[in-house]
Structures are given as structure tokens and as C-alpha cells.
Image (cartoon, rainbow, N blue to C red; front, side, top):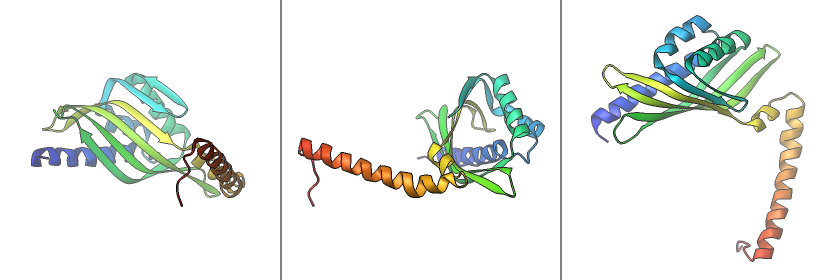
Length: 184
């Protein structure tokens, strides 16, 4: 990788880390979020999460405003990684972290492992300019269930181990019937 390309990726990763932190911290007001994020949005941006999908910049901006008005949360990022296509004209960022939903704080903080992906078009490397065309937020329904007080413990300590044992029994029967059991 050339030095220029590596430096560009580093700058993109730093920018996406900052944007993700802004997008997922409700201490940042809806107006501040909009001012910071708007320059990076493509007119036909698509947002996807496990519950919804929508396309268009005005819908995206309205969703952000509502998200920051209705909920209380923040994001702790573990890693951010950017990959560019061969011509460095488009790229993809993946950000990995934990979103802390704090609606019921101080009684309960709900940790939710979160993966964010952003697909973007690079407009110019100097000064750095890009447009996000696709933003996807992914989280595990299993994590959602496991974090529910009382229900989560039963799910994690009873259901998941029991299901795993059942799956292994079914795997053994299936592999035995097909002659594919691993040797000891």
C-alpha cells in the first residue's frame, strides 16, 4: 500500500470514528448532529437496521433528529477500519463497539454490541471529502434478550446451553447417517 493511500485510510478512519461517536451519543443535540453529519451525506443515502430501512437524505436526517430526541445512549468504539476500492473512489468503513442504551439509568444500562457499516464515495482526498451512500447498523437479537433483566439470565444460562446440546445431538445423528463424523 502506498504511503499516500495509507495516510488517506488513516484520515478516513479518524473521521468515521468521530462521525460514529457523534451519531451515537445523545448528549450531542439533534441540531449539532445534523450540522456535523450533513456534509457527509449523499442525497440518496440508505439507512438499514434490524427494524427498518429507508432511503433519502431528508428521511435520514429526520430519523437522526428523532433518534437523538427519543432515546438516551452513547457508543464505545473498539475498532474502526476503512477499505478502499482499487481506484480509491469508493470505500467501506466498519465500526465495532458497544452501544449503551441508558433509558432506564440509573436502574439499568442496556449494553448492545453494535457493528456499523458505511459505504461511501470519495469526492476528494484533499481536503478530505466523501459522501455516505449506505449506513447500516447491526446488533444481535441474542444480545438484546440476554441484557433483559431476569429473562436474560434464563436465556443465557438455560436456553442457549440446552439448544447447543440439542444441536450437537442433531449434528451427531446427521453426521453419523452420512458417514461424516470427525475422528477422535
